Length: 347
Image 1 (cartoon, helix red, strand yellow):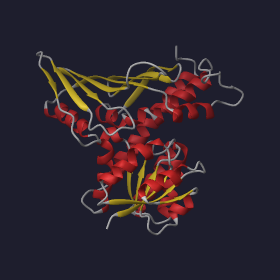
Image 2: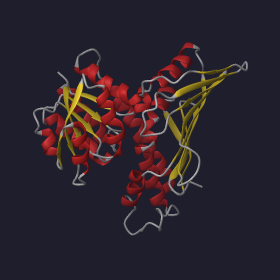
Image 3: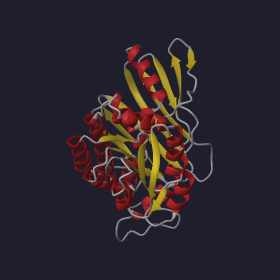
Image 4: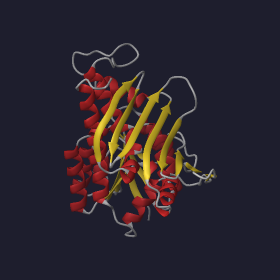
């Protein structure tokens, strides 16, 4: 019998990504309840999948037909909601990234799940994308030494992030019309921290795979209208992150470039909020050969839910330590970048 899923949150990610994914895995999961914070969107989404709608988390936690919880709520609420789901006796949790916004909260959430035997998956869908497995296999099989890493991200505006930076403007520093005042170091630092933990978090587990030890920040600054650029060294490797959201411009670009001692590997991900198959991998070898691997029909959204299903039926184990180290890496990087900017070293 399929596992009953209760969804906390009713935003575009639930509508465009999770509900279609769960429909593809209907032999393993069925949506029982969707809750929002009073927006009314849960009613519309629940009607699509013949589920019940509500406007409070308690309805999900008290529902005996729900054994699996999806957290698609604001990031600052994730850790507390994980603890509540564990206390309510739920068997599994898929938490949208980030796991938590502080290291202490991440440690508490993971410890609670580990102690209770609750399966926990963080929705870092790029990490689960079949293309990343292919790229990593190429690097390991060829014993390639990584020399540099770069993530380039250009997206259309996303109301979620615009809302976040408006809410987090420090007291006494009103945002300028059209966006936050990035000339104020505290505002710029807060913007960059939130975008690292809420957006760059897609790719940081992969960067940690290749450059696990953060050494120091080289540069960090907020970019108008909403974005950031960040350079740091980790495990002796220079790493660059560049992210911007523009109202007009080219189609979405989301790419990881890995430069090794003998070739360059590019992993290009499809735009967010679409089911377009996997990312694709292109390898430019030092001898002039060019190889592009085909896009696979599966994607990271399906793979992360399939991973949770495997944990529920006992065919795989949850790597709690890896998950926690991913969270520590992201939060430590966000804190270091924020401190760098607040101390006036961004220019």
